[in-house]
Image (cartoon, rainbow, N blue to C red; front, side, top):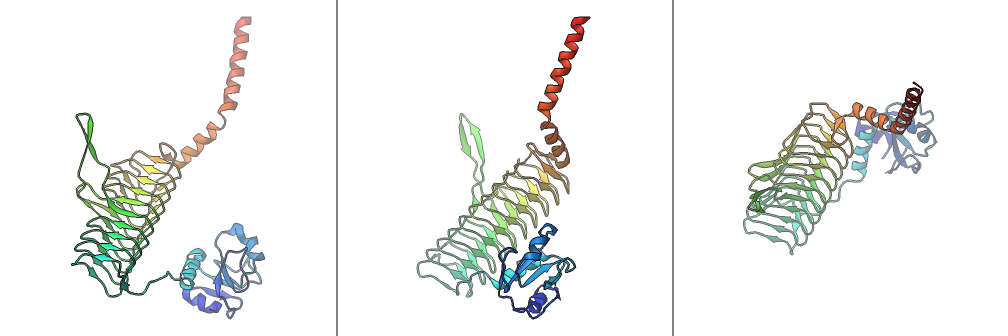
Amino acid sequence: MKADEIAALVGARVEGDPAVELSGVAPLERATGSDLSFLSNPKYREAALSSAAGALLASSAVDLPGKTVLVCADPYAAFAKVVMHLHPPRRRPPGVDPTAILAADVTVAPSAYLGPHVVVGAGSTIGEGAQVEAGCVIGDLCTVGVDCHLYPRVVLYDRTSLGDRVILHSGVVIGADGFGYAFEVGRHLKIPQVGRVVVEDDVEIGANSTVDRGALEETRIGGGTKIDNLVMVAHNVHVGPHCILVAQSGISGSTHLGHHVIIAGQSGAVGHIRIGDGARVGAKSAVTHDLPDGAFVTGHPAQDHRRWLKERALAGRLEELFQRLKRVEAKIGKEEDRA
């Protein structure tokens, strides 16, 4: 593609040679003359200036003299669109593999693909353009929406509902029992988990992540939310739209997340709390109470990020302060002895 064609694709303006041919994408340091790269962080300006890339996506061409620049408001987002255009997701041709096992009343759209050894339970529906890869198991009364993509060995328990364009990576389990027990006469009595899971449109869930079904009602993942690998979402949790849950994070039962919440890696939240709209939880943090809209917390237990930074700075001076205190005490002791 020529630079001006890519610019039209992402709504950019070309500064430089609009006819330069670009056939690939690459990072600044490895790009060649036929590659497109991007500059979204000013600290990489020198790398951009020395890059051999045929063209760059950037927010301005002023600091990139001699370069062909596709000027746009958000270079990183534009780069993502170009990569998607040049490397579209693999799609299998429509059809049901002969080894797949489908209940008699399953509905499969003509444009869907079901791979080897897929199992689909009674009353389930597979939507138009869905891609269900090898070894997936879909329980009874499930719905898989339009253009969903289930990578190999995804499991949907009974009555799971996926919206449109949902992506589930290998090993994802949706709808397993929530972790609920009553203690009776020295033993743990299982509380049946009879709810379900609803995953709304445009959600992506990474490999080996789990979303438990509700105890009585539903667990819900809001539209546009992105969940990383190895994340656990417990029963009755409601995750709002466009949230980010990063690797090895966990949300305990009946906790509600607002919209655009970010839970960083290896962080968690206790049950039965609300995390407000736009809240951010720093890495390795433990949220133990409600968070207001827009909060930014870090630590264990999680607290206001600025306060946490101050406490960490003070903690780094504890040895110095301790030695000063010992010297003061020694001086006072000598003065008391002289008295």
